[in-house]
Length: 276
Image (cartoon, one colour):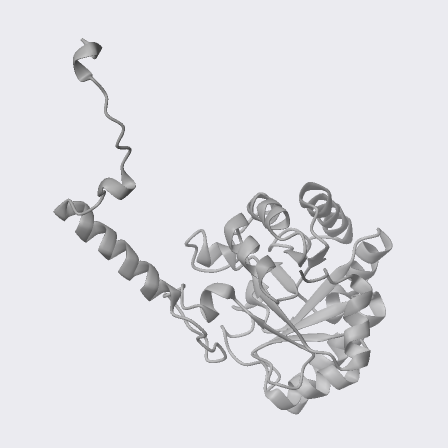
């Protein structure tokens, strides 16, 4: 059985050059499967808006949605570090709002930390949440909650100026007390530069091989989500096809009468005449 990572392990892994992996889960069953694997970290991300709720983006996801999905993941993955994503609108009005909702998320779900999007601008909020006793994971680069402002779902840090800004964002978040930072959708050289600029681990999703941890959405890497496949996603299994094949076989046998056979039926004899 694997040992659950702690906040201190994140920095220790960085210091030791030890890599680790990070995937998503949004329900008890998936969380329990990840818990049985070697993967160290689970994100209950606001990506559940598209993957679980059928929204077109993450913006419509609420605190209630997040709390509802984080609770069963925490129960299903007791040996895995669980991150709760702060949804759009739960922290961008004021520091007071952000601290209040981060506290609510931790109290209601029992997750190990909160994650929020944004760089330098959100450093004061990160500091306030950390001062309130809550561990914070940052998120910079492509930030899906603000994708419209960034020109859509596109690579970030593609110019020297924007790459320097990402390095500054990472440094400011580290100074504010973030224990790790997700870096999404940047050139691999930028991923390397950001990782080398800070002492906390950089968790890369589409950020190249030189970061401290690799992140993917579980439904993407297992081929379960069919609506969109980012360039950086490698398919490790085609679970969607296996599920469709299984459902089609069940449908075929149900219609033909092959299922249920005696093996899957209760075969005790009952004198039906005594029922009347």
